[in-house]
Length: 283
Image 1 (cartoon, rainbow, N blue to C red):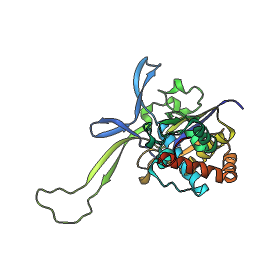
Image 2: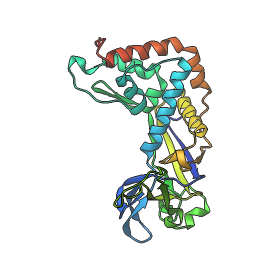
Image 3: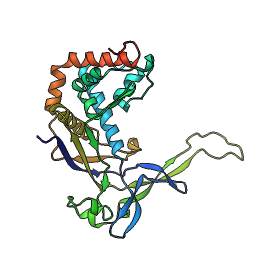
Image 4: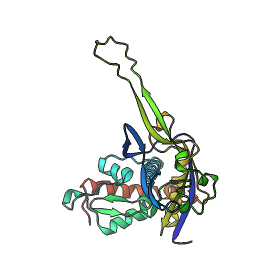
């Protein structure tokens, strides 16, 4: 098996997707975008996309929750929660910093596959994950030069045929008397979104992953498919997607590992929690 594994796939919007950035057009938040060199027009353009970091964050939370549920493990401290679910917080090097030694860092990587896959900041050290998550690029004419491997008729369409302005309203249902100068507390919110049917080219890349770590990615992709929502406002009809990764690894080896090594994994998780909370010093 190659030391570098690339799993290419596609994410298809089954409902509009809201993925806002820090730009606004008037009062309307627009889709997150990046500057791109368009070889067809020989100029720089700003094009919307979906962030790989957002996809990575969703997968992290799903994998960590799934692991804790399968192990019957309860996360009891904020620092441990951050280390598992948000990527950790780097701290100083004093005794209260949760410093861990190199040998323990290796033990964490060798014992806890989701941390080996996704990495984390632990104490004043970074545990680097073996997974690389690409941005999800809309399949369209403007991105066509970067998507040579994709065979899809949407490559012939402009990116702006896949975006629209959506809106939501908040009504004032409080039927109370108001003064002459008092307005009802209701509003209309507009925001740019990808339309239903937009397809995104996307890929995961594993760098020197063990078979268990590769299988852990397979479990992560399966969990994404079980809760297939990305972006904002998923509680109100937005962000439902379908994932397609034809070469995704099987999750079986990872799930069997958790079943067979439950006590060992829980022991290392407990040790990590103690070190993060400053209750156990590094060796």
